[in-house]
Image (cartoon, rainbow, N blue to C red; front, top):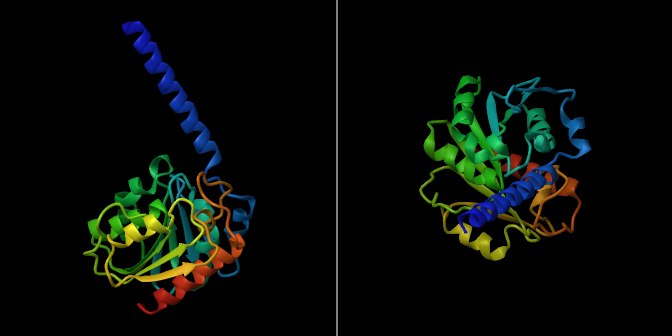
Length: 240
């Protein structure tokens, strides 16, 4: 009997590992277009040893942006956003979380930020990265000017965070439907500025090929990222 239970456990564990491995091979993989955003006339980028990306503006405005990626999504998928803000003069850091989970990169990202030249920082977090951004703001003494949360669920309370916050959500989000979105609002400060992008889904805030359980967007992915970038840039500009 014990042997049968052990074999059953091993079988279930093996199946779970295969499912997880398959999930990692499918979800969060950058699309081909990402490579075209790694360099431009007014910025360059470098990849660090741990897979993190750093975008260097040619004409720095003295400020930095931290982009925290969603679960299983590689930093490269945020190249369009990083390139956009580097073009505006920001130094942009996109850390790679362990096992591609940004919540595990909070402390390391904060330490890395303190090593860099900018002394004023803005945070962008997508999906799990939204919670990771809030953790950076609450756990570390970083001079944070404002935060943008893109389609982020908030399982913990951050109602005490005294930083200007923008929240962008798409009404076609399969991972964060309206009910969960409303629940997340209870865990954020009342001062948060909310923006709903009609037709936007969860995946298309970045450039990756697949997102389990999401809905198909009703707008083009380029339009969704451009909207998020521009709306966030306008919000950040208020707090320079």
